[in-house]
Length: 451
Image 1 (spheres, one colour):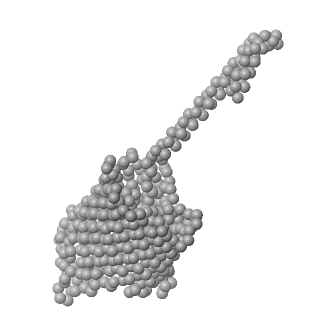
Image 2 (cartoon, rainbow, N blue to C red; image 1 turned 90 degrees about the vertical axis):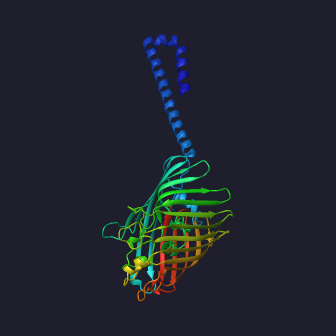
Image 3 (cartoon, rainbow, N blue to C red; image 1 turned 180 degrees about the horizontal axis):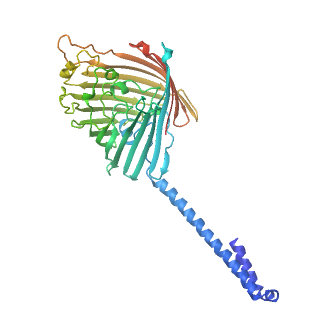
């Protein structure tokens, strides 16, 4: 178009003499001025187009160059912590997280479950178990902030059972040698699920009992941590954090029997911090598809509470875990054991109540899953798990007549399947058979997602 306008201008100039005969000089100048204005307008439009193109190209280059912040499933979870504890689960590939900008990523996971007891269908219930929103922001290529906010059981109020909580909130800095340091509220690298707890990352509608009753589920502490992954496939984690508060123990409630540590965790909520704790974890991935690891967490739990008879009580929790994914198989196992020392005087004050403080508790499970069928959009993976656990395996010695019976060694068989739809969505179905408390036998259905 620009060439056509210039050609017309030249032609008019060559025909100046004939035009002079039929048009005045003023009219000719008017036409030339009009053509010149159109040429200038075209130049302005071309300049604006180039500016827009440059802006788009720079934006694309910035997105490509920005370090990718990990999404949560998941994780769930928990970008740096997940790397230090377990490999990404092969249950389903997580879909890409939502980019809010070149340095900010939005992630999420959630689940809705249905349970029908085998022996009493009147207790069937559906529950929006949790909905989690995560934000990861990179200040630069080596510094990031990770936050997760969770809502449990659909409704949160003073009269409802729901909860709203900050699941993670920490800042991490990576150094030139691969060493990572973080501070804030973060997940403890224990077991296989604590740092990879998104519904797409585990088999079955519910998280297993060992990693909920013995190792508290989504167990997090406020403090400082260091971690590093070495060239030989070894990852180590260590840190100094808040711990548990034994003064919260309610001997009249069954909460301590459900999960000893779950009943006294502090979750960063005005946490008593006179007695701090330390943790350490090692995980080795030197063979493709294989993870071998373990962790330990220990610290006093009396928290210098005035007139508390267990000032020197100490908690120690350790675990060993393994996972192997050869071909279509996914095999895993976890053993965890906890002890609480110096509880004799405290338990004497609880005499006659149903739930004194145990001196030991433990659990283990083995699990096998097989990818039976897969196409471009769907994956069907049946699994079988057996676990054994006891939340009150032993008690400190008590005076005659005050001895407390230990808890049962409960065993649970879980058989079911995960059916993954596309990326990041999973449908689940399973049946659970309890060895001791058979009234808990149940059918479960679940829907989960993570991105």
